[in-house]
Image: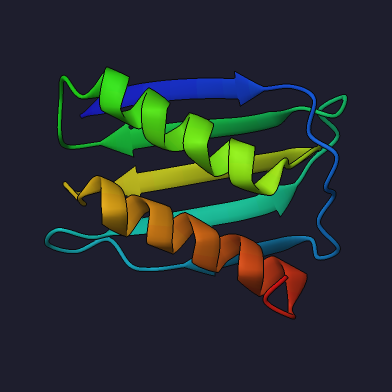
Length: 104
C-alpha cells in the first residue's frame, strides 16, 4: 500500500454536513470519506492505494478536483484498490454532491 497526502489552500466552499462515505472498496473501486474539519481554510486529502507509483497521476486528479470544488475546512480520506482516474473523479464528485444535498 502507498500512502499519499495532499493539502490545498485558498478554497472558499464549506460543506454543510459533518461527514459522508461513498463507494466501497472492492475490485477496481474506491471508498471516499469526506468530512468537515477545522483546517484553517485548507482541504486535506489522504490516500491509501494499492496502485503504487502513481503519485503524479493522483496529484493531477486531486488538483483538478480542488479546482472544480474549491473546498475549505474539508478532510477527505480515500481507500483505493486500483480505480481509474475517471472513477476517482466521479466518486469524489459524488461525495461532495452528497454533502451538499442538492447536487450543487
